[in-house]
Length: 178
Image 1 (cartoon, rainbow, N blue to C red):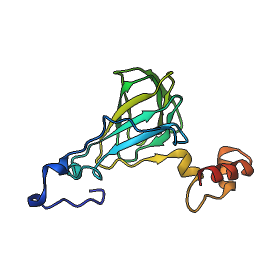
Image 2 (image 1 turned 30 degrees about the vertical axis):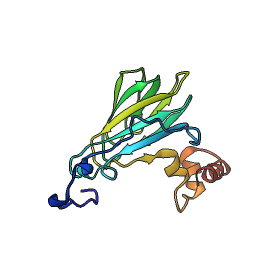
Image 3 (image 1 turned 90 degrees about the vertical axis):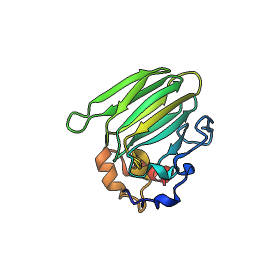
């Protein structure tokens, strides 16, 4: 499933079902978007293979964000542990409706599978959230990185027309993300 083979049951140990460290904050200072995601999926816990779940911890600096992204193989449920987050997701075309909410400690929000969503720390202190995902390997497509940082790059004229921008602006974005 998702390219992972099942381990021989005779070789499985308790460590195949264990991960430590989600209690530790990770720095957000070197992140261009002001957040840091600690992923716990089948790559960190082999015992998750075929179970259809995973987990992340997201640390947000002041004004930090988890930029617009999507999980092609998972629905996400986010729990705010500390801080205040503005969150939202977009319905699909043609409505392109924004569903958003301000979340505080203890609040939960759901992002449906495959829809573009985001979180922004709007509080005056760092924030922490945990998210569970309905896949052992949910994948992540960060919209800006994908469009402007692809290898090879998308022809700037294609993106310029799509976003109704000058191609020079697209080239600047590609340099920033590339």
